[in-house]
Image (cartoon, rainbow over all chains, first blue to last red; front, side):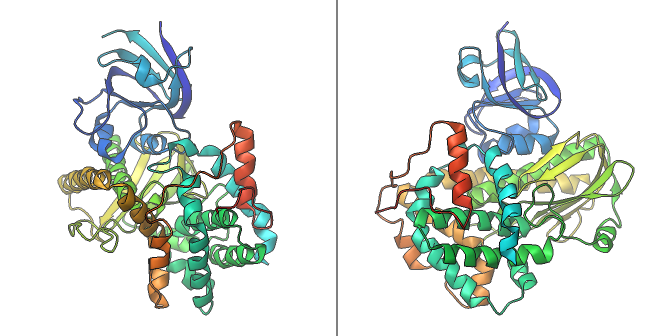
Amino acid sequence: MTTLTGQGTSQGTATGKCRLVEDHTAAFSEGDILVTRITNPGMVTLMGKAAAIVCDIGGLTSHPSIVSRELGIPCVVSAKDAAGKPATAVLKDGMRVKVDGEAGIVEVLDDA
Amino acid sequence: MTRDTIPEYLKAADICLKRMDFKTFVPFPYHQIESMCSREWIRHLLEIADKTQHLTPRERHALFWNTSACRVELLMAMISGAFAHASNDDRLKLFNWFAEALLATAQEDPYAIAVNKIHTSVEVEQLRRGLHPGNPRIGKLLGRLINACYQLSYGLYGDYTPEIGYETYGPYPIGKNRIFVKRHFAELNPQELWPELDKGIKEVRVLATYEDVDLEVDSCTHAIFKGDVVNGLRSYRVFVNGKEPKNEQQLQEAIDHLEARAIAQWEAVKKLDFEETKEKHVQQRCYNFIRLSKRVGIDWCPQYLLDSVKDKPLPTHIEIPEKQEDEDAMWYQASDPREPSPFPKLI
């Protein structure tokens, strides 16, 4: 099972399908897991629909961490696999994952 | 003496700086863009400080957008002073100017080691009047509202100064594992900065009480909630341009409007070219002092500041240490107005 670890910056757990996002035009449904290098304001509506946010970089006070806490959804930043590959290089659209925002863990439950 | 409070300020600065990931700053690395205009920036701040000496510290504080804006600018002024190799006297003069304002208004924790409190208990009780019962559905809506305001602030003011638009006051304990928090988005329609903006929502306030939620606010406005703010919401009140939305539909309309503006604003930011982005960065930095500047009749964004970044590449004279502890030590030393600069001079 593929597992990514990083810094958990907003508590809670969520399970859903990954959507790799670069801007607001990405296809995204309520309850999807937003996966991106780092969030930007263009993703505002998607963040409101996301069950969790996973980013390649960032820390406790980075933008995705702050807004995840406000939205009440889990967030893991600086997420990498055991080989050091960032989340956007490991996770694919449609993969089902479980995000633990307290432990800072993203578990791949099944591939797309 | 404000100088006696430098250790307290440094403790707050250290906590905040270590939590930040400087690699995530956009569009430019902090040390490059800020060092580029540092000499002119210190000149601008010293002029503001000189011309506002007649104002009381409370009056000075009131002319910032919020308390965090004053704190962030204090920290950035100290670091800019280090970039510029300003004299210790000038850096201490600026430290004193900012510190007096914070010591007068945020007496419990002026530099926000852990909290951001400026309201008296009487003021908190007044703010708590008329709060409506909360529930998770409303908690989720408030989260989207705050996120929309936050993202819009980021697009308006940049990654360096989003605190102009975003402030969290608290936590004010109100018994039985409950806290009161006030969020304030003071200026969401900065016409001077973005003249093409529509005249939409200008100000948003969110008042809320939470149960089993802790809050820490650091010296760079970062709010760190522990606990569940959605399910833990016990009461709330929202003001948009000073008026309460009449129902949830109006609240949703405000959210939709702000989200659309945040997206449009980000698209506008992305369209700026290299020169326009540098210019906008300088304007955004100056915007924190626009009310102070106007109060004493000086140009809020002087040409010499804009010229300091114009038609030049970003400087590369500063190398950020590879080891995190060395980088942390560098920023800590730069934050201390008594210490020599850890940076090479910009030629």
